[in-house]
Image 1 (cartoon, one colour):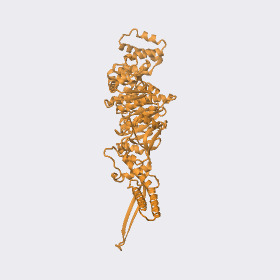
Image 2 (spheres, rainbow, N blue to C red):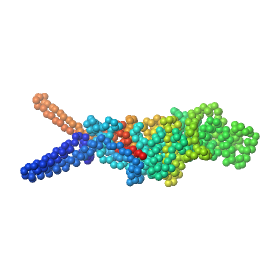
Image 3 (cartoon, one colour):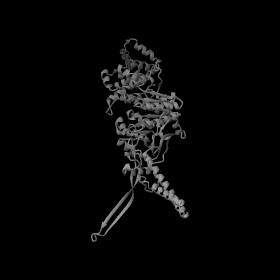
Image 4 (cartoon, rainbow, N blue to C red):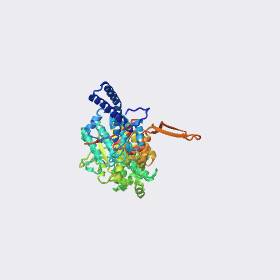
Length: 603
Protein backbone atom coordinates (compact mmCIF):
# COMPACT_ATOMS: atom_id res chain seq x y z
CA UNK A 1 0.00 0.00 0.00
CA UNK A 2 1.47 3.34 -1.03
CA UNK A 3 2.27 5.50 1.95
CA UNK A 4 1.22 9.14 2.19
CA UNK A 5 2.78 10.73 5.27
CA UNK A 6 0.05 13.37 5.39
CA UNK A 7 -2.85 10.92 5.15
CA UNK A 8 -4.38 8.64 7.73
CA UNK A 9 -4.51 5.00 6.69
CA UNK A 10 -6.36 2.07 8.21
CA UNK A 11 -4.94 -0.94 6.36
CA UNK A 12 -6.57 -3.53 8.62
CA UNK A 13 -10.15 -2.72 7.64
CA UNK A 14 -12.15 -5.08 5.38
CA UNK A 15 -10.95 -5.05 1.80
CA UNK A 16 -13.83 -3.08 0.28
CA UNK A 17 -11.82 -2.46 -2.88
CA UNK A 18 -11.79 -6.19 -3.65
CA UNK A 19 -15.58 -6.31 -3.39
CA UNK A 20 -15.87 -3.31 -5.68
CA UNK A 21 -13.47 -4.90 -8.17
CA UNK A 22 -15.50 -8.11 -8.27
CA UNK A 23 -18.74 -6.15 -8.73
CA UNK A 24 -17.34 -4.08 -11.61
CA UNK A 25 -15.83 -7.12 -13.34
CA UNK A 26 -19.08 -9.04 -12.90
CA UNK A 27 -21.13 -6.13 -14.24
CA UNK A 28 -18.89 -5.82 -17.27
CA UNK A 29 -19.07 -9.55 -17.92
CA UNK A 30 -22.88 -9.53 -17.66
CA UNK A 31 -23.08 -6.58 -20.04
CA UNK A 32 -21.00 -8.33 -22.66
CA UNK A 33 -22.93 -11.56 -22.14
CA UNK A 34 -26.30 -9.87 -22.63
CA UNK A 35 -24.89 -8.21 -25.74
CA UNK A 36 -24.01 -11.61 -27.18
CA UNK A 37 -27.35 -13.24 -26.31
CA UNK A 38 -29.73 -10.45 -27.34
CA UNK A 39 -30.56 -8.53 -30.47
CA UNK A 40 -30.42 -5.18 -28.72
CA UNK A 41 -28.14 -2.42 -30.04
CA UNK A 42 -24.48 -3.16 -29.22
CA UNK A 43 -23.18 0.35 -28.55
CA UNK A 44 -24.73 0.82 -25.04
CA UNK A 45 -23.31 -2.52 -23.94
CA UNK A 46 -19.85 -1.59 -25.22
CA UNK A 47 -20.02 1.67 -23.31
CA UNK A 48 -21.19 -0.09 -20.16
CA UNK A 49 -18.50 -2.78 -20.48
CA UNK A 50 -15.81 -0.15 -21.01
CA UNK A 51 -16.89 1.86 -17.98
CA UNK A 52 -16.92 -1.30 -15.84
CA UNK A 53 -13.45 -2.22 -17.10
CA UNK A 54 -12.06 1.23 -16.25
CA UNK A 55 -13.55 1.13 -12.74
CA UNK A 56 -12.24 -2.40 -12.19
CA UNK A 57 -8.79 -1.26 -13.35
CA UNK A 58 -8.89 1.51 -10.73
CA UNK A 59 -10.09 -0.66 -7.85
CA UNK A 60 -8.17 -3.87 -8.55
CA UNK A 61 -4.63 -2.48 -7.87
CA UNK A 62 -5.91 -0.91 -4.65
CA UNK A 63 -7.43 -4.24 -3.62
CA UNK A 64 -4.24 -6.15 -4.44
CA UNK A 65 -2.04 -3.73 -2.46
CA UNK A 66 -4.30 -4.05 0.57
CA UNK A 67 -4.45 -7.84 0.20
CA UNK A 68 -0.68 -8.08 -0.13
CA UNK A 69 -0.20 -6.05 3.06
CA UNK A 70 -2.73 -8.03 5.08
CA UNK A 71 -1.58 -11.49 3.98
CA UNK A 72 1.97 -10.92 5.24
CA UNK A 73 0.63 -10.61 8.79
CA UNK A 74 0.55 -14.42 8.81
CA UNK A 75 4.33 -14.40 8.67
CA UNK A 76 6.94 -15.83 6.34
CA UNK A 77 8.36 -19.32 6.18
CA UNK A 78 11.54 -20.08 8.11
CA UNK A 79 14.49 -20.00 5.74
CA UNK A 80 17.34 -22.51 5.72
CA UNK A 81 20.43 -21.72 3.66
CA UNK A 82 23.71 -23.48 2.95
CA UNK A 83 27.14 -21.89 2.87
CA UNK A 84 27.18 -21.68 -0.92
CA UNK A 85 23.94 -19.68 -0.80
CA UNK A 86 25.44 -17.39 1.85
CA UNK A 87 28.38 -16.77 -0.49
CA UNK A 88 25.94 -15.55 -3.15
CA UNK A 89 24.46 -13.05 -0.70
CA UNK A 90 27.80 -11.60 0.36
CA UNK A 91 29.54 -11.66 -3.02
CA UNK A 92 27.90 -8.47 -4.41
CA UNK A 93 29.00 -6.45 -1.39
CA UNK A 94 32.38 -7.65 -0.17
CA UNK A 95 32.82 -4.72 2.22
CA UNK A 96 29.53 -5.30 4.01
CA UNK A 97 27.92 -7.76 6.41
CA UNK A 98 24.74 -9.52 5.31
CA UNK A 99 22.14 -9.50 8.10
CA UNK A 100 19.31 -11.48 6.54
CA UNK A 101 16.13 -10.00 5.12
CA UNK A 102 14.29 -6.94 6.37
CA UNK A 103 13.51 -3.29 5.90
CA UNK A 104 14.01 0.12 7.47
CA UNK A 105 11.51 0.59 10.30
CA UNK A 106 9.79 3.95 9.92
CA UNK A 107 6.83 5.97 11.14
CA UNK A 108 4.32 4.14 8.95
CA UNK A 109 5.21 0.83 10.56
CA UNK A 110 4.72 2.26 14.04
CA UNK A 111 1.34 3.57 12.87
CA UNK A 112 0.31 0.17 11.53
CA UNK A 113 1.32 -1.51 14.78
CA UNK A 114 -0.76 1.03 16.69
CA UNK A 115 -3.78 0.24 14.53
CA UNK A 116 -3.45 -3.48 15.35
CA UNK A 117 -2.86 -3.00 19.07
CA UNK A 118 -5.94 -0.84 19.53
CA UNK A 119 -8.32 -3.52 18.27
CA UNK A 120 -9.07 -7.22 18.72
CA UNK A 121 -6.06 -8.97 17.18
CA UNK A 122 -8.02 -12.02 16.06
CA UNK A 123 -10.07 -9.84 13.72
CA UNK A 124 -6.88 -9.01 11.84
CA UNK A 125 -4.31 -11.71 12.58
CA UNK A 126 -4.85 -15.46 12.36
CA UNK A 127 -1.72 -16.75 14.07
CA UNK A 128 -1.19 -20.48 14.30
CA UNK A 129 -1.25 -21.74 17.86
CA UNK A 130 2.08 -23.56 17.54
CA UNK A 131 4.07 -20.47 16.53
CA UNK A 132 6.34 -18.62 18.96
CA UNK A 133 5.84 -14.86 18.96
CA UNK A 134 3.68 -12.57 16.85
CA UNK A 135 4.48 -12.89 13.16
CA UNK A 136 2.44 -9.79 12.30
CA UNK A 137 5.14 -7.51 13.74
CA UNK A 138 7.44 -8.17 10.78
CA UNK A 139 4.47 -8.47 8.43
CA UNK A 140 3.40 -4.83 8.72
CA UNK A 141 5.73 -4.21 5.77
CA UNK A 142 5.12 -6.45 2.73
CA UNK A 143 8.29 -5.43 0.88
CA UNK A 144 11.60 -6.57 2.34
CA UNK A 145 15.10 -6.65 0.93
CA UNK A 146 18.55 -7.96 1.81
CA UNK A 147 19.95 -6.09 4.80
CA UNK A 148 23.62 -5.07 4.69
CA UNK A 149 25.86 -3.15 7.05
CA UNK A 150 29.19 -1.63 6.04
CA UNK A 151 32.15 -3.39 7.64
CA UNK A 152 33.52 -0.08 8.89
CA UNK A 153 30.33 0.55 10.83
CA UNK A 154 30.64 -2.75 12.72
CA UNK A 155 33.97 -1.54 14.13
CA UNK A 156 31.91 0.56 16.54
CA UNK A 157 31.38 -2.66 18.59
CA UNK A 158 28.18 -4.63 18.73
CA UNK A 159 25.63 -5.82 21.29
CA UNK A 160 23.28 -8.75 20.67
CA UNK A 161 20.44 -9.15 23.17
CA UNK A 162 17.92 -11.95 23.29
CA UNK A 163 16.35 -14.46 25.61
CA UNK A 164 17.09 -18.19 25.50
CA UNK A 165 16.26 -19.69 22.12
CA UNK A 166 15.56 -16.36 20.41
CA UNK A 167 18.37 -16.77 17.87
CA UNK A 168 21.56 -15.19 19.26
CA UNK A 169 23.69 -18.21 18.33
CA UNK A 170 22.20 -18.41 14.84
CA UNK A 171 23.07 -14.74 14.30
CA UNK A 172 26.59 -15.58 15.45
CA UNK A 173 26.67 -18.36 12.82
CA UNK A 174 26.00 -15.85 10.04
CA UNK A 175 28.48 -13.27 11.30
CA UNK A 176 31.24 -15.79 12.00
CA UNK A 177 30.90 -17.53 8.64
CA UNK A 178 31.15 -14.22 6.79
CA UNK A 179 34.24 -13.16 8.76
CA UNK A 180 35.90 -16.49 7.93
CA UNK A 181 35.02 -16.09 4.24
CA UNK A 182 36.73 -12.68 4.29
CA UNK A 183 39.93 -14.32 5.53
CA UNK A 184 39.91 -12.51 8.88
CA UNK A 185 40.91 -13.82 12.30
CA UNK A 186 37.98 -15.06 14.37
CA UNK A 187 37.98 -15.73 18.11
CA UNK A 188 34.83 -17.29 19.59
CA UNK A 189 34.32 -17.46 23.36
CA UNK A 190 31.32 -19.63 24.15
CA UNK A 191 30.73 -20.37 27.86
CA UNK A 192 28.03 -22.98 27.28
CA UNK A 193 29.88 -24.80 24.48
CA UNK A 194 27.40 -24.91 21.60
CA UNK A 195 28.53 -27.77 19.35
CA UNK A 196 26.56 -26.49 16.36
CA UNK A 197 28.28 -23.11 16.60
CA UNK A 198 31.66 -24.85 16.65
CA UNK A 199 30.79 -27.10 13.70
CA UNK A 200 29.52 -24.20 11.61
CA UNK A 201 32.80 -22.37 12.16
CA UNK A 202 34.73 -25.46 11.06
CA UNK A 203 32.55 -25.89 7.96
CA UNK A 204 33.11 -22.25 7.04
CA UNK A 205 36.88 -22.82 7.19
CA UNK A 206 36.52 -25.83 4.90
CA UNK A 207 34.36 -23.82 2.50
CA UNK A 208 36.98 -21.05 2.54
CA UNK A 209 39.58 -23.61 1.47
CA UNK A 210 41.71 -23.84 4.63
CA UNK A 211 40.50 -26.23 7.32
CA UNK A 212 43.85 -25.85 9.11
CA UNK A 213 42.77 -22.36 10.21
CA UNK A 214 40.24 -23.89 12.60
CA UNK A 215 41.23 -24.69 16.19
CA UNK A 216 39.21 -25.52 19.26
CA UNK A 217 39.72 -25.34 23.00
CA UNK A 218 37.34 -27.31 25.21
CA UNK A 219 38.10 -28.65 28.71
CA UNK A 220 35.71 -31.56 28.14
CA UNK A 221 37.68 -32.68 25.06
CA UNK A 222 41.34 -32.19 26.02
CA UNK A 223 42.63 -34.70 23.48
CA UNK A 224 41.39 -32.58 20.56
CA UNK A 225 42.02 -29.16 22.12
CA UNK A 226 44.77 -26.73 21.42
CA UNK A 227 47.10 -25.68 24.23
CA UNK A 228 47.13 -21.96 24.97
CA UNK A 229 48.79 -19.85 27.65
CA UNK A 230 46.42 -17.03 28.76
CA UNK A 231 49.40 -15.27 30.38
CA UNK A 232 51.52 -15.27 27.24
CA UNK A 233 50.92 -11.71 26.06
CA UNK A 234 51.60 -8.67 28.20
CA UNK A 235 53.27 -5.29 27.98
CA UNK A 236 54.01 -4.82 31.69
CA UNK A 237 54.53 -7.66 34.15
CA UNK A 238 52.00 -6.13 36.52
CA UNK A 239 49.26 -6.98 34.00
CA UNK A 240 49.60 -10.67 34.83
CA UNK A 241 48.97 -10.12 38.52
CA UNK A 242 45.97 -7.95 37.70
CA UNK A 243 44.44 -10.66 35.47
CA UNK A 244 44.56 -13.28 38.18
CA UNK A 245 43.73 -11.00 41.10
CA UNK A 246 40.57 -9.94 39.27
CA UNK A 247 39.32 -13.52 39.68
CA UNK A 248 39.45 -13.32 43.48
CA UNK A 249 35.89 -13.04 44.82
CA UNK A 250 35.45 -9.72 46.56
CA UNK A 251 32.57 -7.63 47.85
CA UNK A 252 34.45 -4.55 49.01
CA UNK A 253 36.16 -2.09 46.72
CA UNK A 254 39.46 -2.11 48.67
CA UNK A 255 39.63 -5.75 49.69
CA UNK A 256 42.90 -6.40 51.62
CA UNK A 257 42.90 -10.08 50.60
CA UNK A 258 42.64 -9.13 46.93
CA UNK A 259 45.40 -6.53 47.29
CA UNK A 260 47.67 -8.98 49.10
CA UNK A 261 47.01 -11.63 46.46
CA UNK A 262 47.91 -9.15 43.72
CA UNK A 263 51.14 -8.27 45.50
CA UNK A 264 52.12 -11.91 45.92
CA UNK A 265 51.42 -12.69 42.27
CA UNK A 266 53.30 -9.61 41.11
CA UNK A 267 56.36 -10.48 43.20
CA UNK A 268 56.53 -13.96 41.68
CA UNK A 269 55.97 -12.70 38.13
CA UNK A 270 58.65 -10.02 38.53
CA UNK A 271 61.07 -12.64 39.83
CA UNK A 272 60.36 -15.01 36.93
CA UNK A 273 60.98 -12.12 34.56
CA UNK A 274 64.35 -11.45 36.24
CA UNK A 275 65.51 -15.00 35.63
CA UNK A 276 64.22 -14.90 32.03
CA UNK A 277 61.51 -17.44 32.72
CA UNK A 278 57.98 -17.06 31.35
CA UNK A 279 55.27 -16.94 34.02
CA UNK A 280 52.46 -19.46 33.71
CA UNK A 281 49.71 -20.75 35.96
CA UNK A 282 51.54 -23.86 37.14
CA UNK A 283 54.67 -21.93 38.16
CA UNK A 284 52.66 -19.29 40.01
CA UNK A 285 50.68 -21.92 41.89
CA UNK A 286 53.85 -23.81 42.82
CA UNK A 287 55.55 -20.78 44.35
CA UNK A 288 52.41 -19.72 46.19
CA UNK A 289 52.01 -23.14 47.76
CA UNK A 290 55.59 -24.31 48.39
CA UNK A 291 57.33 -21.01 49.04
CA UNK A 292 59.83 -18.89 47.14
CA UNK A 293 63.16 -20.15 48.52
CA UNK A 294 64.39 -21.42 45.14
CA UNK A 295 63.17 -18.29 43.39
CA UNK A 296 64.99 -16.01 45.86
CA UNK A 297 68.29 -17.74 45.12
CA UNK A 298 67.80 -17.61 41.34
CA UNK A 299 66.52 -14.01 41.28
CA UNK A 300 69.26 -12.52 43.44
CA UNK A 301 71.97 -14.36 41.53
CA UNK A 302 70.53 -13.31 38.16
CA UNK A 303 70.22 -9.70 39.28
CA UNK A 304 73.78 -9.67 40.61
CA UNK A 305 75.15 -11.04 37.34
CA UNK A 306 73.32 -8.36 35.34
CA UNK A 307 74.02 -5.35 37.57
CA UNK A 308 77.30 -5.99 39.44
CA UNK A 309 80.81 -6.18 38.06
CA UNK A 310 81.98 -9.77 38.53
CA UNK A 311 78.59 -10.50 40.00
CA UNK A 312 78.81 -14.26 39.50
CA UNK A 313 82.15 -14.50 41.33
CA UNK A 314 80.84 -12.42 44.23
CA UNK A 315 77.80 -14.66 44.60
CA UNK A 316 79.92 -17.83 44.52
CA UNK A 317 82.29 -16.43 47.13
CA UNK A 318 79.41 -15.45 49.40
CA UNK A 319 77.81 -18.88 49.10
CA UNK A 320 80.91 -21.00 49.84
CA UNK A 321 80.25 -21.41 53.54
CA UNK A 322 76.49 -21.97 53.17
CA UNK A 323 74.79 -25.33 53.53
CA UNK A 324 73.00 -27.04 50.69
CA UNK A 325 69.42 -26.70 52.00
CA UNK A 326 67.21 -24.28 50.00
CA UNK A 327 66.21 -22.45 53.17
CA UNK A 328 69.82 -21.67 54.17
CA UNK A 329 70.71 -20.64 50.64
CA UNK A 330 67.72 -18.31 50.46
CA UNK A 331 68.56 -16.63 53.78
CA UNK A 332 72.13 -16.17 52.62
CA UNK A 333 71.03 -14.57 49.35
CA UNK A 334 68.80 -12.16 51.28
CA UNK A 335 71.83 -11.13 53.29
CA UNK A 336 73.92 -10.87 50.10
CA UNK A 337 71.38 -8.50 48.59
CA UNK A 338 71.24 -6.28 51.66
CA UNK A 339 75.00 -6.04 52.14
CA UNK A 340 76.35 -6.17 48.58
CA UNK A 341 73.66 -5.26 46.03
CA UNK A 342 71.34 -2.83 47.79
CA UNK A 343 73.95 -0.14 48.53
CA UNK A 344 74.95 0.14 44.86
CA UNK A 345 71.97 -1.04 42.76
CA UNK A 346 68.73 -1.47 44.68
CA UNK A 347 65.71 -3.09 43.02
CA UNK A 348 62.15 -2.52 44.23
CA UNK A 349 60.99 -5.62 42.34
CA UNK A 350 63.60 -7.81 44.01
CA UNK A 351 62.92 -6.30 47.41
CA UNK A 352 59.24 -7.18 46.99
CA UNK A 353 60.19 -10.84 46.48
CA UNK A 354 62.52 -10.84 49.49
CA UNK A 355 59.86 -9.21 51.66
CA UNK A 356 57.39 -11.88 50.59
CA UNK A 357 59.91 -14.61 51.42
CA UNK A 358 60.47 -13.20 54.91
CA UNK A 359 56.74 -12.76 55.57
CA UNK A 360 55.24 -14.92 58.30
CA UNK A 361 54.26 -18.19 56.63
CA UNK A 362 51.07 -18.68 58.64
CA UNK A 363 49.82 -15.18 57.96
CA UNK A 364 50.79 -15.48 54.29
CA UNK A 365 48.77 -18.67 53.85
CA UNK A 366 45.72 -16.97 55.38
CA UNK A 367 46.01 -13.93 53.13
CA UNK A 368 46.18 -16.00 49.93
CA UNK A 369 43.42 -18.37 51.01
CA UNK A 370 41.05 -16.86 48.42
CA UNK A 371 43.64 -16.99 45.64
CA UNK A 372 44.86 -20.57 45.97
CA UNK A 373 41.50 -22.23 45.13
CA UNK A 374 41.43 -20.31 41.87
CA UNK A 375 44.97 -21.36 41.01
CA UNK A 376 44.14 -24.96 41.86
CA UNK A 377 41.05 -24.91 39.64
CA UNK A 378 43.02 -23.55 36.68
CA UNK A 379 45.79 -26.13 37.02
CA UNK A 380 43.78 -29.22 37.98
CA UNK A 381 43.67 -32.29 35.77
CA UNK A 382 43.75 -31.70 32.02
CA UNK A 383 43.66 -27.92 32.48
CA UNK A 384 47.27 -27.97 33.64
CA UNK A 385 48.47 -29.00 30.20
CA UNK A 386 45.88 -26.95 28.32
CA UNK A 387 46.50 -23.59 30.04
CA UNK A 388 50.18 -24.04 30.96
CA UNK A 389 51.60 -25.79 27.89
CA UNK A 390 54.99 -27.47 28.17
CA UNK A 391 56.62 -26.86 24.81
CA UNK A 392 59.52 -29.18 25.71
CA UNK A 393 57.25 -32.23 26.00
CA UNK A 394 57.86 -34.09 22.74
CA UNK A 395 55.16 -36.66 23.56
CA UNK A 396 52.39 -34.06 23.55
CA UNK A 397 51.49 -33.45 19.91
CA UNK A 398 48.64 -31.03 20.58
CA UNK A 399 49.00 -27.66 18.91
CA UNK A 400 50.42 -24.81 21.02
CA UNK A 401 49.40 -21.25 20.23
CA UNK A 402 48.44 -17.93 21.77
CA UNK A 403 46.08 -15.09 20.94
CA UNK A 404 48.72 -12.98 19.24
CA UNK A 405 49.77 -15.84 16.97
CA UNK A 406 46.15 -16.70 16.18
CA UNK A 407 45.54 -13.13 15.04
CA UNK A 408 48.75 -12.93 13.00
CA UNK A 409 47.86 -16.13 11.13
CA UNK A 410 44.18 -15.14 10.63
CA UNK A 411 43.22 -18.23 12.59
CA UNK A 412 39.77 -19.30 13.72
CA UNK A 413 39.58 -20.56 17.29
CA UNK A 414 36.56 -21.75 19.21
CA UNK A 415 36.85 -21.53 22.99
CA UNK A 416 34.18 -23.75 24.55
CA UNK A 417 34.41 -23.05 28.28
CA UNK A 418 32.11 -25.86 29.44
CA UNK A 419 30.42 -23.57 31.97
CA UNK A 420 27.47 -25.93 32.28
CA UNK A 421 29.78 -28.45 33.97
CA UNK A 422 31.75 -25.93 36.05
CA UNK A 423 30.65 -22.32 35.80
CA UNK A 424 33.38 -20.97 38.09
CA UNK A 425 36.25 -22.46 36.10
CA UNK A 426 34.61 -21.58 32.78
CA UNK A 427 34.14 -17.98 33.87
CA UNK A 428 37.75 -17.74 35.07
CA UNK A 429 39.14 -19.10 31.79
CA UNK A 430 36.99 -16.72 29.77
CA UNK A 431 38.09 -13.72 31.83
CA UNK A 432 41.77 -14.63 31.41
CA UNK A 433 41.38 -15.02 27.65
CA UNK A 434 39.67 -11.64 27.36
CA UNK A 435 42.36 -9.98 29.46
CA UNK A 436 45.02 -11.50 27.22
CA UNK A 437 43.18 -10.17 24.17
CA UNK A 438 43.14 -6.71 25.76
CA UNK A 439 46.93 -6.84 26.00
CA UNK A 440 47.19 -7.86 22.35
CA UNK A 441 44.81 -5.04 21.43
CA UNK A 442 46.95 -2.55 23.35
CA UNK A 443 50.04 -3.69 21.49
CA UNK A 444 48.27 -3.41 18.13
CA UNK A 445 46.86 -0.02 19.11
CA UNK A 446 50.28 1.38 20.05
CA UNK A 447 52.62 -0.32 17.57
CA UNK A 448 50.48 -2.04 14.97
CA UNK A 449 51.43 -1.68 11.33
CA UNK A 450 49.03 -3.03 8.68
CA UNK A 451 46.92 -4.66 11.37
CA UNK A 452 44.64 -7.37 10.02
CA UNK A 453 40.99 -7.21 11.10
CA UNK A 454 40.03 -9.36 14.07
CA UNK A 455 36.53 -10.52 14.99
CA UNK A 456 35.82 -11.43 18.62
CA UNK A 457 32.53 -13.13 19.44
CA UNK A 458 31.53 -13.57 23.08
CA UNK A 459 28.35 -15.52 23.78
CA UNK A 460 26.74 -15.22 27.23
CA UNK A 461 29.16 -12.34 27.77
CA UNK A 462 27.99 -11.61 31.31
CA UNK A 463 29.66 -14.83 32.48
CA UNK A 464 33.16 -13.76 31.42
CA UNK A 465 33.18 -9.98 31.03
CA UNK A 466 35.60 -8.05 33.24
CA UNK A 467 36.94 -4.52 33.59
CA UNK A 468 39.70 -4.97 30.97
CA UNK A 469 36.96 -5.85 28.48
CA UNK A 470 35.70 -2.28 28.81
CA UNK A 471 39.09 -1.15 27.49
CA UNK A 472 38.84 -3.66 24.66
CA UNK A 473 35.48 -2.21 23.65
CA UNK A 474 36.82 1.32 23.98
CA UNK A 475 40.13 0.90 22.16
CA UNK A 476 39.26 -2.06 19.95
CA UNK A 477 38.41 0.01 16.90
CA UNK A 478 41.88 1.55 16.81
CA UNK A 479 43.33 -1.97 16.95
CA UNK A 480 40.96 -3.15 14.17
CA UNK A 481 39.16 -5.46 16.56
CA UNK A 482 35.44 -5.88 16.06
CA UNK A 483 33.72 -7.21 19.17
CA UNK A 484 30.29 -8.86 19.20
CA UNK A 485 28.95 -9.62 22.66
CA UNK A 486 25.69 -11.44 23.33
CA UNK A 487 23.66 -11.49 26.52
CA UNK A 488 20.13 -12.16 27.71
CA UNK A 489 19.56 -9.07 29.85
CA UNK A 490 21.32 -5.83 30.71
CA UNK A 491 20.99 -6.75 34.39
CA UNK A 492 23.46 -9.60 33.78
CA UNK A 493 26.21 -7.04 33.22
CA UNK A 494 25.29 -5.20 36.40
CA UNK A 495 25.41 -8.42 38.42
CA UNK A 496 28.77 -9.43 36.94
CA UNK A 497 30.53 -6.06 37.22
CA UNK A 498 28.98 -5.13 40.55
CA UNK A 499 27.46 -1.78 39.66
CA UNK A 500 25.09 -0.09 37.24
CA UNK A 501 27.77 2.49 36.38
CA UNK A 502 30.23 -0.12 35.11
CA UNK A 503 27.48 -1.85 33.16
CA UNK A 504 26.67 1.49 31.54
CA UNK A 505 30.35 1.85 30.65
CA UNK A 506 30.13 -1.39 28.71
CA UNK A 507 26.89 -0.40 27.01
CA UNK A 508 28.21 3.06 26.20
CA UNK A 509 30.91 1.54 24.00
CA UNK A 510 28.47 -0.52 21.92
CA UNK A 511 27.32 1.45 18.90
CA UNK A 512 25.31 -1.25 17.13
CA UNK A 513 22.46 -3.02 18.92
CA UNK A 514 20.65 -6.13 17.72
CA UNK A 515 17.64 -7.07 19.83
CA UNK A 516 15.91 -10.40 19.36
CA UNK A 517 13.07 -11.48 21.64
CA UNK A 518 13.65 -9.86 25.04
CA UNK A 519 11.54 -10.69 28.09
CA UNK A 520 13.18 -8.51 30.75
CA UNK A 521 11.34 -5.14 31.06
CA UNK A 522 14.53 -3.27 32.00
CA UNK A 523 16.30 -4.53 28.90
CA UNK A 524 13.27 -3.69 26.76
CA UNK A 525 13.38 -0.12 28.05
CA UNK A 526 17.13 0.15 27.39
CA UNK A 527 16.69 -0.96 23.78
CA UNK A 528 13.74 1.27 22.95
CA UNK A 529 15.04 4.35 24.75
CA UNK A 530 17.87 4.30 22.21
CA UNK A 531 15.31 4.64 19.42
CA UNK A 532 13.78 8.00 18.45
CA UNK A 533 10.20 8.95 19.19
CA UNK A 534 7.62 9.49 16.46
CA UNK A 535 4.13 10.95 15.95
CA UNK A 536 1.18 8.56 15.94
CA UNK A 537 -2.11 9.54 14.28
CA UNK A 538 -5.49 8.67 15.77
CA UNK A 539 -9.08 9.60 15.03
CA UNK A 540 -11.26 11.00 17.81
CA UNK A 541 -14.99 10.61 17.18
CA UNK A 542 -17.50 12.84 18.97
CA UNK A 543 -21.26 13.00 19.12
CA UNK A 544 -23.62 15.22 21.11
CA UNK A 545 -27.29 15.90 21.79
CA UNK A 546 -28.71 19.10 23.32
CA UNK A 547 -32.24 20.30 24.07
CA UNK A 548 -33.69 23.64 25.16
CA UNK A 549 -35.29 24.08 28.57
CA UNK A 550 -38.16 26.23 27.29
CA UNK A 551 -38.82 23.86 24.36
CA UNK A 552 -38.07 20.27 25.47
CA UNK A 553 -39.22 18.84 22.18
CA UNK A 554 -36.70 20.92 20.27
CA UNK A 555 -33.17 19.48 20.21
CA UNK A 556 -29.99 19.55 18.17
CA UNK A 557 -27.53 16.74 17.47
CA UNK A 558 -23.98 16.71 16.14
CA UNK A 559 -21.33 14.17 15.26
CA UNK A 560 -17.75 14.70 14.23
CA UNK A 561 -14.29 13.24 13.66
CA UNK A 562 -10.95 14.83 14.42
CA UNK A 563 -7.55 13.58 13.26
CA UNK A 564 -5.06 13.90 16.11
CA UNK A 565 -1.33 13.31 16.56
CA UNK A 566 0.55 12.42 19.70
CA UNK A 567 4.09 11.38 20.53
CA UNK A 568 4.69 7.65 20.72
CA UNK A 569 7.39 4.98 20.57
CA UNK A 570 8.82 4.19 17.17
CA UNK A 571 8.98 0.58 18.38
CA UNK A 572 6.97 -0.11 21.56
CA UNK A 573 9.11 -1.93 24.18
CA UNK A 574 6.46 -4.59 24.77
CA UNK A 575 6.85 -5.78 21.18
CA UNK A 576 10.38 -6.97 21.99
CA UNK A 577 8.85 -9.66 24.16
CA UNK A 578 6.58 -10.75 21.30
CA UNK A 579 9.14 -11.20 18.52
CA UNK A 580 9.25 -14.67 16.93
CA UNK A 581 12.48 -16.65 16.94
CA UNK A 582 15.16 -15.33 14.56
CA UNK A 583 13.53 -11.91 14.19
CA UNK A 584 15.23 -8.74 15.43
CA UNK A 585 15.05 -4.99 15.64
CA UNK A 586 18.43 -3.31 15.20
CA UNK A 587 19.93 0.11 15.55
CA UNK A 588 23.03 0.13 13.37
CA UNK A 589 25.31 2.46 11.43
CA UNK A 590 24.74 5.44 13.66
CA UNK A 591 20.96 5.45 13.79
CA UNK A 592 19.49 3.29 11.03
CA UNK A 593 16.57 1.29 12.47
CA UNK A 594 16.19 -2.13 10.85
CA UNK A 595 13.50 -4.77 11.32
CA UNK A 596 14.96 -8.04 10.11
CA UNK A 597 14.67 -11.80 10.13
CA UNK A 598 17.46 -14.36 10.01
CA UNK A 599 17.86 -17.62 8.11
CA UNK A 600 19.32 -20.74 9.71
CA UNK A 601 22.71 -21.76 8.34
CA UNK A 602 22.80 -25.52 7.67
CA UNK A 603 25.28 -28.04 6.30
